[in-house]
Amino acid sequence: MPDHFQVEHQDGGCRARTGRLTTPHGEIQTPIFMPVGTNASVKAMRPEDLTDAGAQIILANTYHLYLRPGHRLVEELGGLHRFMSWDRPILTDSGGFQVYSLTELRKITEEGVKFRSHIDGSMHLLTPELSIKVQEALGADIIMCFDECPPADAGREYVERSLAMTTRWAQRSKDAHTRRDQLLFGIVQGGRFSDLRQRSLQELQGIGFDGYALGGLSVGEEKPVMHEVMDACSDLLPADYPRYIMGIGTPEDLVEAVWRGYDMFDCVMPTRNARNGMLFTSQGRVNIKRKQYEQDQGPLDPACSCYVCRNYSRAYLRHLFRSGEILASMLNTHHNIAWYLSLMGRIREAIRQDQFEAFRKEFYHQQHTTAE
Ligand SMILES: Cc1cccc2c(=O)nc(N)[nH]c12
Image (cartoon, rainbow, N blue to C red):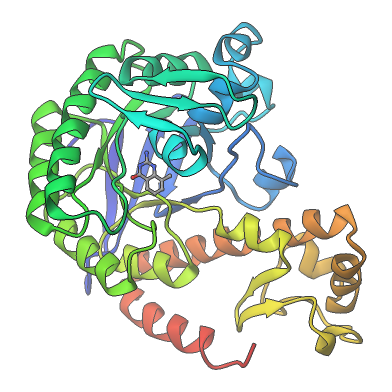
């Protein structure tokens, strides 16, 4: 059992479990959702709003902070926690995925990924060594290996070659990792091919990491494919280490992944949907701009105890959104993040009561009984 992670309770009826993950900036109760703060900011939320909403850890991105303001500047100013006045844990992604998803001009070589900055067009080479150096300079509590995320429709031959390079990059990431107080997680690739996923995981375990993440999901694959990969890897991932699925997901995805024994998640969905007026509630999704809410005096979600649901009506939230007020993004984001984090709290409690199986059935029913 690693000393930074303990499984606290295994649900008696399924693979769901609660755990405690210890990092330099504090302990995290899992299963956990991590709000995405790409540019050292969870968009439209202040740190105190995040802690008020129950956030234990947030995610930031190497790619963005390396390009702007630069990791050396953040380091000189005391590191990312001080820079953004966030004193709880931070996880940084390693940058390869963002290069792939954000830049037009990029070239993958054994050395690393050459790309043109989406900000000013300058050319850069991001390597495993540089990615780790940036994450160490930022001072994140959990850092990620530099990996390649193959396109969802990539053929077996491409995925096999890509996976072999991701393993070589994982070794180079670990060799470059000097700040041993930071936890370094490996990223399992292999696309939709279960045998390649198994090979990736075996190779990563041979190198040895503080946690294991599933990459290459939520990149456009069909839901059944995502669930197949989750199932195949669930029994392979070492049970006494943290299991993180990157980029997941909808509330239903989170429940399905916890049911399969996963512990950590991140996704832009709650923050991005909030800015588009798509809000999560205990009765399913609410599209706040719809006319039906014009005179609705009630709270966004009667079952939610967040600041927004305690102080504002749906009519007001609709008005703000339609008027393009900045406060719309702030209040919608606060609620969506608070709702996601409250869902994770209810999930942890259901597991502790050995009731997660029942929770999963009831959750699906609730989310799909009310017309939007
Ligand atoms: C953030 C994210 C989402 C989805 C997939 C991935 C991935 O495969 N690799 C990395 N490093 N990050 C990912």
